[in-house]
Amino acid sequence: MNGFAIQATKVVKRFGDFTAINDINLSVPTGSIYGFLGPNGCGKSTTIRVLTGLLSPSEGQVDVLGLQVPKQTEQLRQKIGYMTQKFSLFDDLTVDENLKFIGKIYGLPKKTLTHRINQQLSTYGLNSLAKQRVAGMSGGQKQRLSLAAATMHSPELLFLDEPTSAVDPENRRDFWEQLFDLSEQGTTILVTTHYMDEAERCHRLAIMDSGVIKADGEPETLMNTMGVTVVEVKADKLRQLKEQLLPYPEVISAAQLGIRLRILIDQSIADPTHWLTMRFPYLNHAELTIARPSLEDVFVTVTGEGRQ
Image 1 (tube, rainbow, N blue to C red):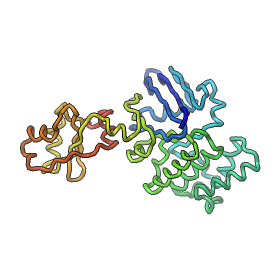
Image 2: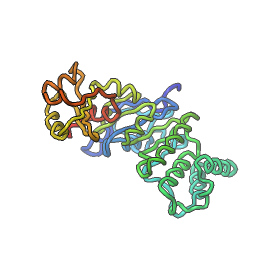
Image 3: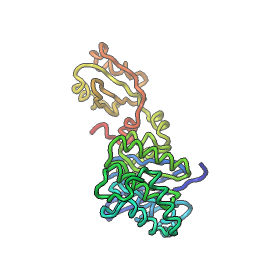
Image 4: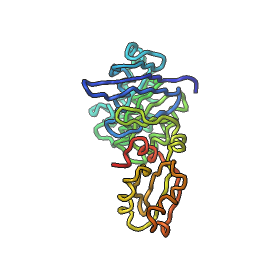
């Protein structure tokens, strides 16, 4: 991958007295799948709207596909695709008619349009649904059609705003396989999500909280450099242990997973299992295991969600 499809520098977006995006820097490599992970209301969707030119930044510089945003937004729109979580489709039109409408919006010639519709129907498994009205389709079918519509004009850059929030796990998995196919063909993809498993699939990832990018890097790197040790404890009275642990400043997070308590302890503690047993002697008879960090661990570490 050469160069960057998106470069944003010190971007701020305010709505009156409210700052939705606060001094963010962003570099998205060409051809990559770049993820935005964060809770609802953290600024993910606002960031996408700024990057696509739908909103003008209050401060900062935005360069997308070599074009300055918002100054060159009109040229940019022909080069990007945008798929929202609510699937921007026309319920009273058929699958074929939706694709034809989108293709005409992007000015595809008639011969190219027909070829492209047939290509998209085949690629996204919609051939048997071509004459089906959207209103009668399932969530997974609508998702496939929405992606087909967003890529009708073969965009260089695809923005996906929580595109899997309304579909089941199987459809989510299939959807991601299609994203990897697009990436392999050279399309750059920026996707917002609040699913940890999806975030781990991205080539690179930013974690946002309250309008600020708190972490940015490859998922594996973020997990390996998070600055905590993860200890899993199998013992009695886990709820009580959790409440006793959280007041300690060395404990970043404690969350119960089935019959185990997953504890994130600051790496300043050289021997976390010894630290735990010294403070809670009954844990000498419990099962304590050092565990591999997860992306959820990274998230609660950088956002402080673990103490809520």
